[in-house]
Image 1 (cartoon, rainbow, N blue to C red):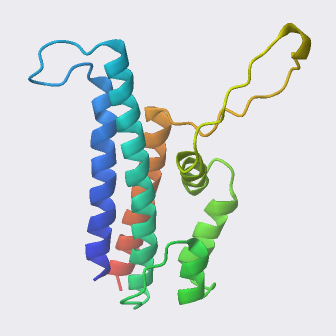
Image 2 (cartoon, rainbow, N blue to C red):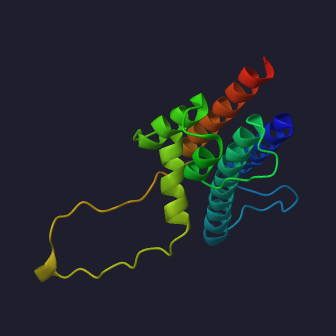
Image 3 (cartoon, rainbow, N blue to C red):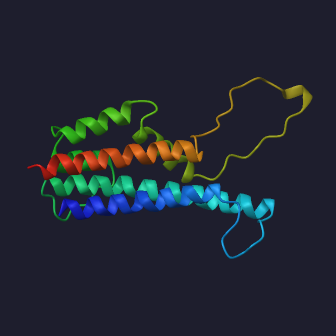
Length: 170
């Protein structure tokens, strides 16, 4: 049963990788002409947001996969806290995910940041005049580059594959 969920996680990650791979191609096959700058920016943003949504979905499916590994056949936890309340705080998967949740720069942490930024409207830009210039660190948000998303994608894939291998040995 968990193997089906592993396939679901893998499928979402494959689709996200496919979207990110499209960022390297300037034209769409069959169109013949390169898209203008605005069209290219729109396609890029669509591919990035689509890949992020698929990554976020794969994380939720990963939680369901873990629940199934612990014989929770109908529950579908959406958060790590929900999963921990279902299967308890003791299992190795919970401690591994809690560690990732706390570690800055982890794939779990990156997905948390992406989810927050993807769920909110963009911040309004303030106008700057000579009188009100103050040096402050700008919040640039999470790294949405294809390279960063691929690193996170590969880490999620590795985690899911590791879980599947570990539990299929039993």
